[in-house]
Image (cartoon, rainbow, N blue to C red; front, side, top):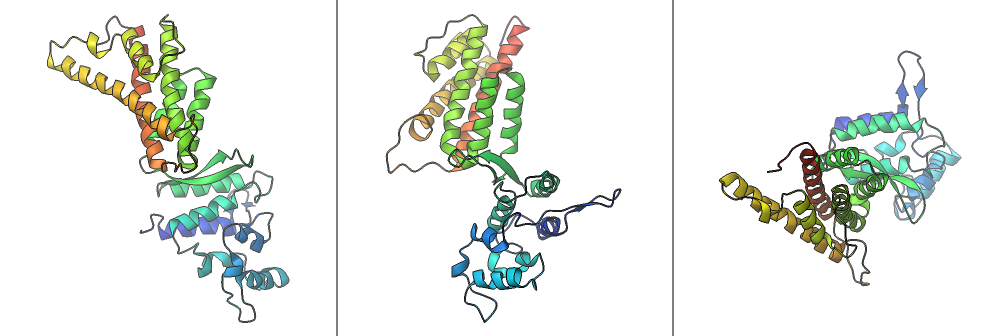
Length: 317
């Protein structure tokens, strides 16, 4: 597959890691070293098996000993040697390899505990976004580290915008946390994201029903919640007058939204979080999680927009 990150932007990012950012007014340079607090061979071992990679020095057999000699015992390689070394495929290799390297540069076990790396990360992300990529911070429940992963923004930006809009609409810390978890886990943990997509619909429906004075039965499933919410908002398909073409079409779309909620629930039951899985369970790829998130955001936005609109108007349809 052809690389999406153009050569010019890849070189600009490499230059940021080698030379840093120079303030033209103060003449000061903000600079980080790519291996951070680690020795270069220790850093690279987090990404490559150095002992199985060849040496470029005939005196040594492996890349590990090669690097040790030229960057620790001696310093006859320049600081940016790794970017032009074809063994590591950073400058001219696949996008995935380049992005993995960048994520490792900003890992909290690598970077120094100061804020000098943040402006460089922001500048790098600015370049990556022009190529539909971004480095994002996530929490690792297993290690406790907050670290960076890369994600492809192609087809995702509209979902993130929808999520931000939802957070603004709901003045609920609980729902905001649901949305944050859903968005952060879509690439790293699709199973969790699918589960949160269903929970977001449930939370939205319960909030609207409570605001409309409707008692919510704890045993209601997601389809019942959506049905009751639509009835409360007077947009349920069975309550829509079908005396003209516009309303008939609206009724069909509303019926599809109910089916959508049911399908997300089925998606979550089979592939999302919340139910035990067999030892042979294989999680779905991130694109399926993004599908569930997109559908959930669409439904929730429509229901909440309708609630707000109805609060200021007598009729809904």
